[in-house]
Length: 149
View 1 (cartoon, rainbow, N blue to C red):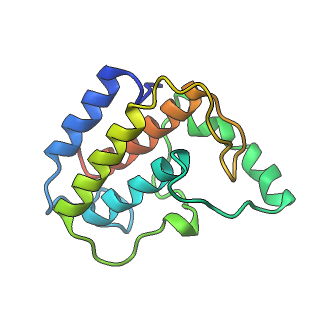
View 2: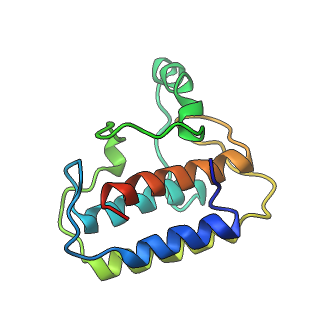
């Protein structure tokens, strides 16, 4: 899996975001393109500690641990996977605003590539820097494919 920390993967994601059109239609799912852009910020914000999530109970943590490696391994995610309630976007968003915000936070995250210590994910626990980079790339790639770029 590529990592958003590499220059090549970062540039690829930025090029694909630039190709998005505000009228792009999803190949699957319920979000429109503006909602998807807003949604894609959340995992980056968690990693950068801009937002915090409540830690799940012991049972849910155990359940989440079984799926942890699927967040950064080489297998693509299936379409229409459920998402955390905190990451669901159902109200209308402005395309240009959300696109600019996403680009800004991706750049912030990419610039943290030299960071040695990362916070534990509130639901999945500890990730290495490499795993954080792969996970963020995989999430962005999944949703950009959702809109055909």
